Image (tube, rainbow, N blue to C red; front, side):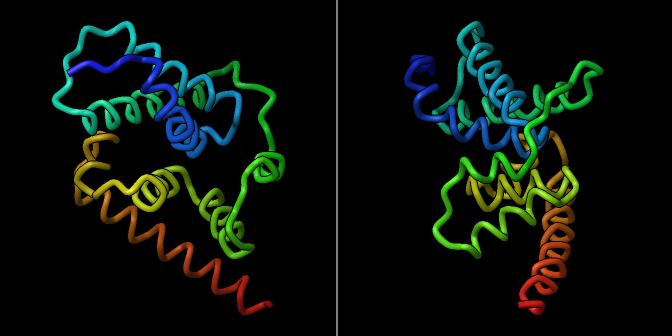
Length: 159
């Protein structure tokens, strides 16, 4: 199965950007990773089983590319989280606080939390996308939740 690249770009650009941003924490680099994923799809000959397979493949490419960018020597001019937060719209202040705390998590926890809660992937799908075992996904989700619970409890107790 192959779909038109332009249609995929319109449908998944924001999701690819968000997943890549979870890895690199930089809007410009996240945009590059999202574009790279779409470009690789466009240039590939790969046949996909269904649209969900395409989505998972695109996310995996974007995440891997963002990891490469994050590790590169030439990474510069990052956008501070506060500036990025101003470009996002949240339903309520609580959602904004939760997102800020998710972004403060270490990358391996932040990414699985994002894919599970914001992208609605199952632990099995996350394992395939990230190339890790299901048990590792579950452990990372559990530890990420514990970290969030502790941090958010402190913030809400102070209020």
